[in-house]
Image 1 (tube, rainbow, N blue to C red):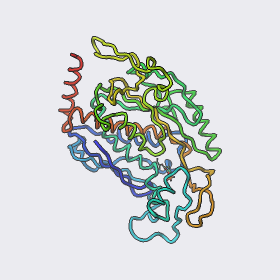
Image 2 (cartoon, rainbow, N blue to C red):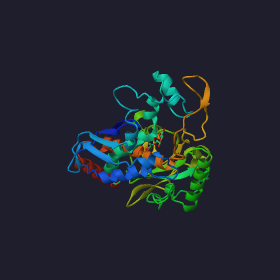
Image 3 (cartoon, rainbow, N blue to C red):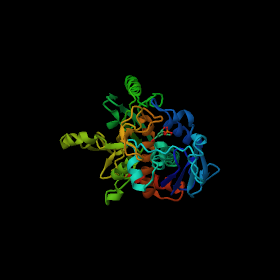
Image 4 (cartoon, rainbow, N blue to C red):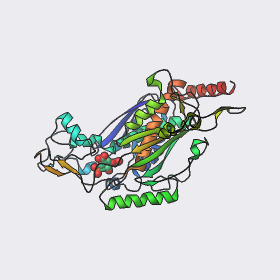
Length: 388
Ligand code: EPS
């Protein structure tokens, strides 16, 4: 299962096509819309989110609520388009009052993209490099999430730090496979701890006041996985590289750690690897989950636990210096409006990327055509593991 998106941040709409979708999968638009709303939320979002109310329109590949096996095409309209129709017109000339973007923002794709493509208007770059594109990813991932849910796999996320405000927890997920932190979605920063939520909000308030932006970290978790999904035999099989690559494709993601992550490099082996046991009911079990649910590039059956770092957003209301591409003089970088912090939203996008990788890995292992056959193959596999 793969997706491709198209669409500019201030164009008429974002589009996604998902291919490799098996037939017979129940799809709910309202579930996708719930995820789109989760992506739009979060303390510290800027003016744009007051304009947009993302809603998906499924335009092909689904009939009477179930997939047919054809590619699924989805659209999310940009409400802001009505303010940009002339400046973003696909055809005709530019309006006489067009203000080109010539003061590239440090940290955004503006400058390097303009150099690379030989344009005198960074807007050609930023419209596509904008994180607005991730709305299409979340819509597309609705298909992957429904697929995984049908096979008993759930993907969720929570924020663990914003700036220097941290949620310091001894994460029970490292030990208990069925643990799910409560109250993620009721926190304005999608953090399950009340005191940490308040500290994160205060950090965002301070940053906004100072014309700053803030990054942070979050954890993506997948539960209900069977062991042996993914592969060890070639580089391209390994879920570690596939999930890492998928997460690094999200704008502003700068770090990915599995399980203990970098901490594993500081500990001796006996305090890193997860002892193996045999349970008469559950089969092979692990005493801990320091590996974060992956060994040898394959799922172990424990929850997948990935911690991701997002850098601060490049658009600063107190801008850094840049060079004007017309005059070649020093100037302040562009700033019209910005989000102070989009870490809670980025976590929802990361759930989507993880869901796509896991969905594809399940399809590889259990078949691709029809949900009924895929579910039968999964049942038979579970049965085989039990009788080992
Ligand atoms: C973004 C800039 C802002 C963000 C945008 C990402 O948009 P605008 O330029 O319209 O103010 O709000 O994110 C979204 C629109 C979104 O839906 O997440 C950027 O430059 O990356």
